[in-house]
Every structure is written in structure tokens, then in C-alpha cells.
Length: 128
Ligand code: HEC
Image 1 (cartoon, protein in one colour):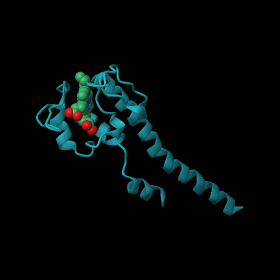
Image 2: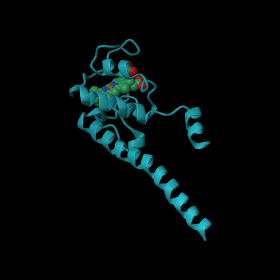
Image 3: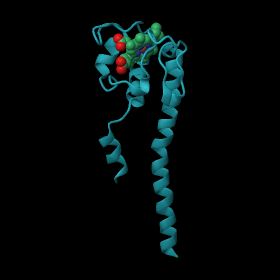
Image 4: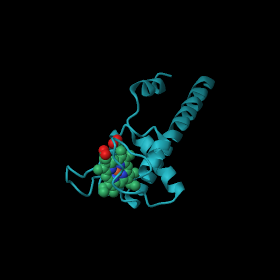
């Protein structure tokens, strides 16, 4: 009997611990969706993983999907790029970010979160 009770306790504890990060990720994705839409990045950028479609479809001016960007890990560079102080592929970003520094910070964190994770990192997480 004791064994069953402790098994249930362990199970409850484990699922509780695992639910926390899942909830956080969910909330954060909602925040990211909001900030991307607030700042109108979705005028030009689709974000497939958040179900965001770019407002414009012109292949010449549409931006890359945030779930596929390679720049996402490079926080300092991204911040400068978004305020047009840094060039990527020899070009400045077409628009200058219009929010304050906190918003820029939040946005860059979102980009990092939305970007594809390297395979190895994901494997490490699931192997425990
Ligand atoms: C007027 C259209 C437009 C808007 C609005 C816009 N972007 Fe862009 N963005 C682009 C285009 C076009 C590129 C590709 C530029 C290039 O490759 O030189 C780009 C590139 C980027 C990149 C580099 C991605 C990569 O991997 O190449 C990031 C990151 C980015 N934008 C973030 C944002 C964020 C965040 C916002 C909202 C604050 C935003 N953009 C708003 C058009 C736009």
C-alpha cells in the first residue's frame, strides 16, 4: 500500500515539475505573438510556429520566418540590427524598431525562443 502511495506521489510530483516549463513556454509564446503583432513585424514576417501569416505576400519584400532565422542566438547583434546600427548581408533592416529598450529586449528573447533549436540540445533534454 505504501508503495502505491509513494508511486502516486512521485508521479504527481514529476508531472507537476514537467508542467511548469510547458506552461511557461505557452505563456511566453502568447507574449511573443502579442509583441510581434504590436510592433507590426508581421506586416512583413510570417511566424509559422505561432500561426502568424505575413500581411504582405510580395516575395521581394517579405521577411524570413522567425521560426527559421539563423541570427536568433546573437542578442547584441540582433538588437543593433533592429535599430539599424548593424548590417546583415551588407544591408540594414528595412525598418527601424520603434519601441523602448525593454520591448526590444523582449522581442530579441522571443526571436531566440522561436528559432529552431540545434538537434543536439533537444536530444540532451529528452534523454534524462
Ligand atoms: C517592411 C517590412 C518589414 C518589417 C515591418 C519588419 N521586417 Fe524584419 N526583415 C524584412 C526583410 C525584407 C528582411 C530580410 C533582409 C535581408 O535579408 O537583408 C528582414 C530581416 C529580419 C531579420 C533577419 C532574419 C534572417 O534570418 O535573415 C530579423 C531577425 C528581423 N527582420 C526581425 C524583425 C522584427 C523583430 C520586426 C518587428 C519589429 C521586423 N523584422 C519588421 C522586412 C521587415
